[in-house]
Length: 411
Ligand code: PLP
Image 1 (cartoon, protein in one colour):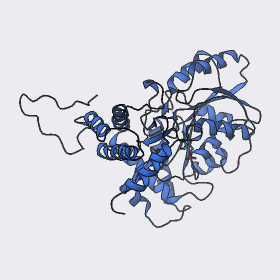
Image 2 (cartoon, rainbow, N blue to C red):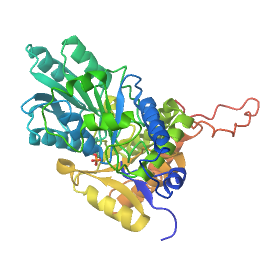
Image 3 (cartoon, helix red, strand yellow):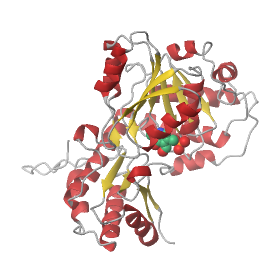
Image 4 (cartoon, rainbow, N blue to C red):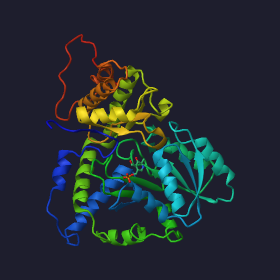
């Protein structure tokens, strides 16, 4: 098929050509004297992305799910209580993992489409005078519903309740795309995977651990072998890994971290915000609703778009893929059929988004949803027009004297 596949699922995301080239290297000996230079480059870069100077990043040949398990199993013991909200497929799966590992989950059931219920977290923590709750599990960006929650507010709730529980944050679809500050927000375990904001194939499970989390390691009695922080720390301290690392992914990670550094993390976040704003403008122009119930929860990495009653989101996704070579995200679990998702994270720009929005509206029309062709594209284009920063090295010409500013969509 001619042309590119339009990959607009919220992970895996597009792998930039530069990263693909960086991964396309012959294998070398991961026990050679040159390997530690690669290891230290990726650990340093990850600390910058996590915004931590005191925490320690871990890299496992796994995915986000493995990183969840590493965070839990290295810091907790069988029967320990964890406090966690369920408000989408990924928070649900993390709870399921905690329970299957033998932890006791105090679950705050929350409407799917709402953010993490900070006040209810606070109440439960304040009521737990004997500090039985050992960890708070918090999904920063619920990818299933396109909802971002407030990690800083969660930290404040813990501090106000004077509760010592560890703060574990799932940042799988936020880290490297949405503002994330491990040290400032007192995040004890920051969890992510390689295939989203880090613009790599899936295959790395990444955890940033605070000194407080590392101090729990000796008391934590959950079994762990592959994900053992102790083995990792010992090997990493010498510049190596306890078992065979994925060299291509590490080469790729070194390159993607360099790209993030060159663009500047704050610019990366601003770009995601701008791109997401265009998608939200398109959804409004279509007369549709987001699954996220309030603007404060709107995610800058994924928009979950409700299809009208009587239609199936899976049909939109199927037609988009078969006819237009556009991959959209599905509705998961109880959202199955009710929505489709546009992932807008990673290596993307305005014109790519306009293509995806055009494909989504064509697919919606094809299945009979009454949206006006071009309406979403026009709304997004109006949002983007003039608001994108000039590409580095290509400064804009000065506007003619007396011209009105063009930045209608500028923030
Ligand atoms: N957490 C969130 C928020 C996710 O979006 C995902 C995957 O999409 C996961 C966890 C699980 O990660 P993985 O599929 O890399 O195991």
